[in-house]
Image (cartoon, rainbow, N blue to C red; front, side, top):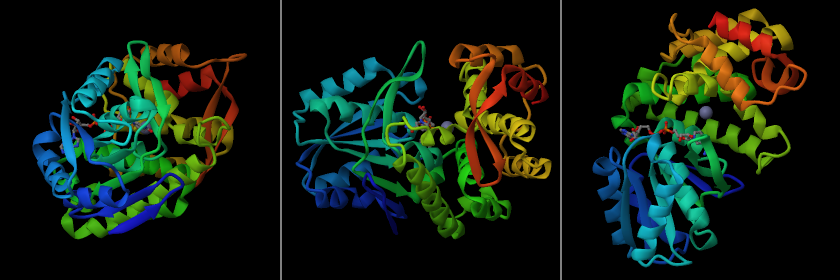
Length: 359
Ligand SMILES: NC(=O)c1ccc[n+]([C@@H]2O[C@H](COP(=O)([O-])OP(=O)(O)OC[C@H]3O[C@@H](n4cnc5c(N)ncnc54)[C@H](O)[C@@H]3O)[C@@H](O)[C@H]2O)c1
Ligand SMILES: [Zn+2]
């Protein structure tokens, strides 16, 4: 097992960690009442193990299971979670465990942030995306009809438990989408990891024999994201904006596909391809490096071209709805070379239109 210390708290990465949940929470000195928030796909797979472990450490867990899927990430559901916690007698000294992917991480963290003005949050991410991205950085929240993550709070988890065994049940497409964020991290901050990924394969990393490789990969990603977050905890100074590489166009593609056509990581993969094309034009990225990034995304079975009939105009409409253009220009994250990124102010709507047309 690896233990990573971040500014916020501890992250454990390894195998067979779910049965240690109770013991680990005990060392943090939490009181006995707690809630496990999970979803309908994850509950039958792992909830019992976590619950039993907590009970053996003398905790009294209440299980709250939401319907799986982004549609559960609402203020109404967060309120319902709080009501369940009140009914179960959780108080100021209780804590909340989020057992699931990023959806559960975000809403359970938000419930922990507002319950009695903030009680500790423990994350047990069960998707690769949640391990390398959403469980780090303390952003919690819910969606509204107007857009994703519009209501939320910063609330750092006290502990994150990354048990690699849980990834074995993750559908292949879900596993692969985590690599979009991993490749993003490599492009914006870690050229060495980029070279390592060029000789890896998603299918290989899933096999038990490569658990060690997956463990160090997750550790490396946690370090990259925490390093960036530490410089800009509240997303104010601009440093954290670098994590949005590929996301301006990626989010617009997700929205244009009504959040059904592409998973988040798949839309981000397409957004990275477009951001690289824009980087060649506006930031001097070498075309061979741009091609290497596209190759790497393909290697992890991520989309790099839009289906021919996909409504490209809807993507541009979504960007115009989402972002502020000043004098036809937008703040946009570009990469001048592998391992480096900055927020450019010379990217135009036409640049974006051209990159989307070429996708
Ligand atoms: N807070 C942040 O900084 C941050 C960053 C990135 C993304 N997010 C959020 O994360 C969410 C996306 O995360 P996600 O992709 O993990 O989505 P998710 O939580 O919806 O999980 C994806 C699917 O996989 C299922 N699943 C989860 N673990 C499983 C397992 N081990 N075996 C089988 N099935 C499993 C889930 O039930 C769900 O159907 C979005 O809500 C997004 O806004 C937050
Ligand atoms: Zn993302």
